[in-house]
Amino acid sequence: MYLVLLLMPALQHGSGYQAITCLAAGCRCTNGLSPKNKISGGKIIGRDKRKTKNRAGLALRLAAGTLLESQTYLGAQYRRFRTKLGAPKARKAMGARLARIIYRMLKYGQEYMDKGNEFYEQKYRQLQIRRLTKKAAELGFEIVKAA
Image 1 (cartoon, rainbow, N blue to C red):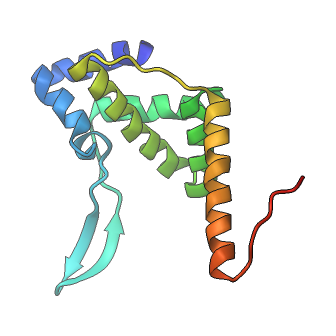
Image 2 (cartoon, helix red, strand yellow; image 1 turned 90 degrees about the vertical axis):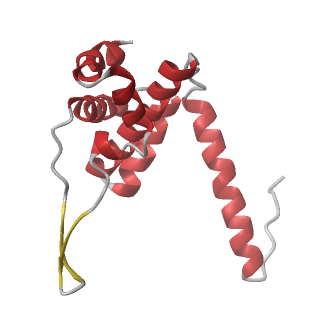
Image 3 (cartoon, rainbow, N blue to C red; image 1 turned 90 degrees about the horizontal axis):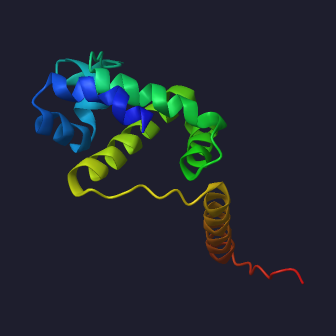
């Protein structure tokens, strides 16, 4: 709720619907996800982070940073991304996810239903078990569940 109130001035800055569709358009304009490559002679000689002045993107990235302490599905996902990618990339990825959620809420009127931290941890554990089983089968082993 607070995030939507924080985003309203940013959404009203452009024409309302354009700003909302911008949120969902791959989140490029909101989070600056497109690369800024320095090209000379057809070769990439350097890369930079794209500088953005979009207030909606900034608000979403700030909101994503607060998920660290949250005991929700998004909080668990952010913590996993943070350990895997590092804090800045995880904040940007979760900002993009929040943008997609807000887009669905505003365009289709869908409510966000949080499934909880335990649901995410259980789902992630099942994913790890499937990966390990597949890897063991590739190596010629069979995993047996302990009694």
